[in-house]
Amino acid sequence: MPEREVPPWSKDARYDWNKGWWLLISVLVVVFDRLTKLWVYETFYSGEIRPVTSFFSLILTFNTGAAFSFLAGAGGWQRPFFVVISVVACLAFSWLLLRGGSRRFSLGLVLIIGGALGNLWDRIAYGRVIDFLLFHYQQWSYPAFNIADSAIVVGAVLLFADGLRQRKYAVYEDQGSEGRGQGSEMRHCEERSDEAIQKK
Image (tube, rainbow, N blue to C red; front, side):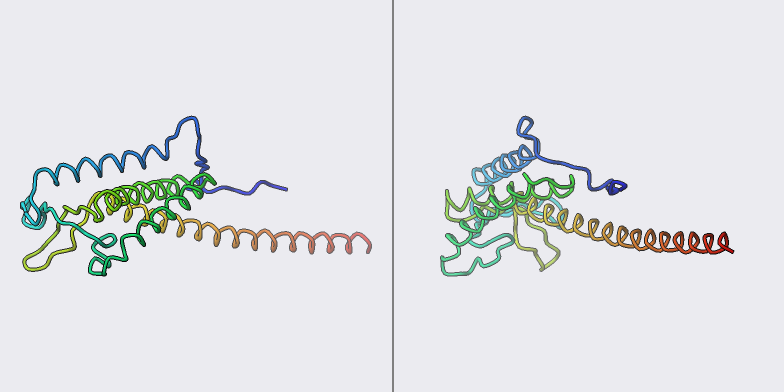
């Protein structure tokens, strides 16, 4: 029986305990997130805005909600809730990472793990998350965010793209299986026809 063909985007990326490559990316995300937050915290006063371009500014603001200020206005119950969610998510994604998958899938997981740990650090240490990246246009502005939020979003996009690729390959494989099945039936019909001719 022929081996199943593996698409190029599904190359095995199983975690190697000796190298620690994938989780090293999570560590780098946490370190970069911490350094940028500490710099803004020590340099800015709360609410201070420093324009960088006409549409992008740096700001020091604090968020008690999730990424992009989701549930920031809740009554305080969201702090332990998001701590538990972050811990569970990190454990679940670490388990998925150890199971292995495509490189895109693994990269998406470690980015989300790093982002979740970066914001989890803030929640435990300060009870709120430091945000400092602000995009705006005239009177409109997007909710401020940070490096950890960015890593989570990029990781989610990579997981979504990997899912689409896997689905596309599954459809391709099903079509190939149908084609092989039809070819096999045609060969059987030809063999029966040849046997009938030989008997005559």
